[in-house]
Image (cartoon, rainbow, N blue to C red):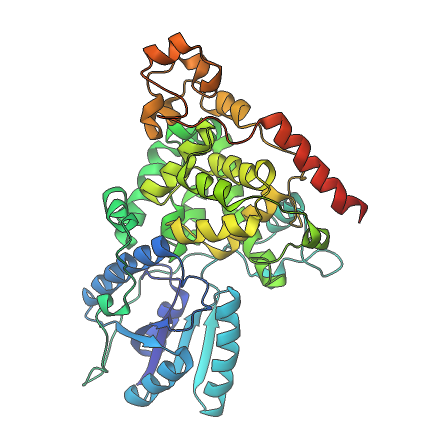
Length: 472
């Protein structure tokens, strides 16, 4: 019987796993996960995402073990470890689901050349996105640069039916050496990890249960309340999609077959396609995580200070909505999407700190850090991406707070020192009188900072900087 290595990467599940299913139909399977030693791997610096990976591997190992199948775990140079495993198991083939991060693409190119030389069968499958990305091109056979056009084009494509969990066999008499999950050293001594334990349960079954509950009780409220951070109206699925605890195709099909359809349905589906759009850009523009897609921004006159950057990171800017978001991130590894746009805009346009610095911080702290989504989000907010909000769209953090956190519930949750402020001043405490501040037991400059920059001044300065690259 053919022996097939199923190489797991960002698809740590057994449901709707194309490579696993097809391998199980053709022979006995040898599930393998290899953590790369190369520091240029996009997730190497992501403290929160590596914590999530640790939990995901525990889940995958348990689910495979329940089927009588061991998971082989290695660490090191991917090509070397894969070739060694082929030798140790006498494997005939390697099956895997495609990934699109630049490091993964480059390492895979080299691996496939070596496997071909060794006459090892290689099969890759479409498994981690909704659509086959190279099929989604405009009339000029070029990638789409506007999401609305991309969305309309994808509506002409079919999302393939999810694969069932297959019956699996393994005929290995002697198991190859395998690391324990803790030996990958994915966990650090960072205090963020203890807080993540309090807020998240990561794994395949947890992801499916979480999605099932949202589909039944939350989806109908999504359109109306998704932009209000205190409403808890979003799916919170992104941490489960990072390492593939749940299949995005299975999410798509479960929505389409759900008995209740309404405006929330299309809005949510658009978010799933937005994720594909991010990967479409990453595939065609692999430097997107580190370089602006609009060349003019290469000469943008960034002049932000490290002091202001540190205050932003710690949630000490003096703007409550911004600070609430940054503190939520520090406490939970997560931040509501509307607030992400506000804090990113504030860093780039109010403080003139390069977007790449904010992107690096998110890389470290976000439990749902995803190379494509993170890069596209920062380029969108900055205005330097191919389908971006224009730079001159500068969020007023006070106005954003009044609109999307009108009662101040979100701010009070994450900035308890402001909890006693009246609603009128919750997003602009500096306008409160000394009497009101005293009644709220709040001393500005001591308990909570004054704004580190005045909005109108920052807006004018940002537009002046933008005009310099427009003229260049």
